[in-house]
Amino acid sequence: MAIYEDGKLKGKLGSVVYRTVNGKTVVQAYPKRPKDGYPTTKHNVQFGVAARAASGMYRQLKDFALNLTMRNLYSSLNGLFIREFKHLRPAVVSERWALVPGSLDLQVGRRSWLEDLVESEIVMRIKDTTCQLRIPPLNLHGGRFSKYRIWSEVQEMELAFTLLHYDFETDSASVVARWISGRFPKNSVPGAVDLDCDLLNIDGDLIENGLLLGCVGLRLFASETSDSYLNTSGFNPFSIVGVWAKG
Image (cartoon, rainbow, N blue to C red):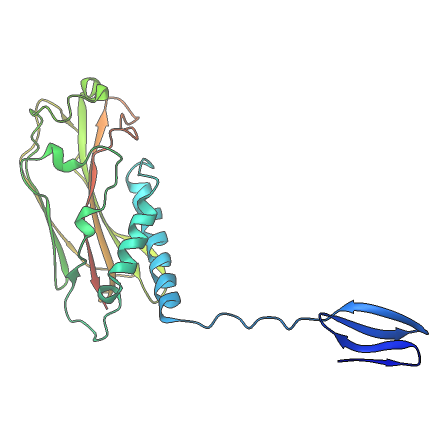
């Protein structure tokens, strides 16, 4: 409330304040109190955990897939981790690794998946202390990929697999295992591949919790002596074969 005194206004009137400074009346805006910060909510916490996990996994996955991943792969990972947060951080500590629902639908490349080039489904399983992977024989005689112009230039190729681990305690992602088949001619593809790798971190300790992501890809070459890949953003047959979680 403002008061008229000795021909001058003093005090607050509406959104302004009247003050006397050196014998003169000064009008100032009434200072506003800063708004309290938004309280931390369960959703904020979940979003932060999911975003950090998605960021860590994305950087490692992008590098493995020759930096030719979809632009929205990060947001797809983030969305998956938010939707399935109960699998990332279960209320009760789990004794087993569980496949995160929806993780097999994550798309690495813009148009082509590795599944288009194999006879049957690629299967990854996490059992206690090991990761088991089966890549069925390649089937290069279909017409689903012949529409890609780059395919006619391919003469050599190699299969590759990576297993990534995201540690909730350190908020960091690392490579657990890497495997490369070695080059083979397009007209002489190998049979099925069966791999087993131990779930050990960089220090040689057993990985007992966090996230595990497996990805398989096919790297393409123009010749036996070529050092560069023919893979492009339009034809990069890499596929995520599962994200597993253990709280």
